[in-house]
Length: 207
Image (spheres, helix red, strand yellow):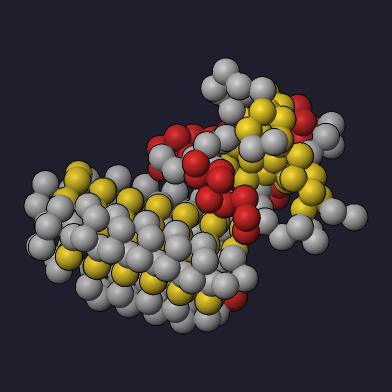
């Protein structure tokens, strides 16, 4: 029997993820969202974001995925659901993504998009977003609640701490440590550790 799946978040991020749902495993039933809307993309909005727990409790839905791009908000919702229903939070991985070692998937709420590459011995923890064409090379660790934008490259043996946003087409060279709550701008080239949270842009990026 297919599981009844709902998304937390009815917006563009949900639209990007929805086509990757496996229709043989999940029956998509609708959204939870705080906007004043009753449907999105032809599916009902079942309630506000924080209305989801009773639906899980009574079996109206079996599975959820958080479709919000903002790291802090996604973390807040993840922790709210995970406290009692961690096992109901699913991973959504494109069949066109390449994950070299299955034990790289070390949590729940992980999205890996079309054409993404996850190298050998990578560790991806809870609630991470790896977008279209992103590349994470061997032995890199990505802590929870990060967002790796399309075509970003994280080279081998890096350590990416919680709530990092890695912008489109940016490059992090090998063996670097990136502070939590950091934003790396699109096209940036990071060649040394980032030890303080902030927004970094350009080559050898600065705040």
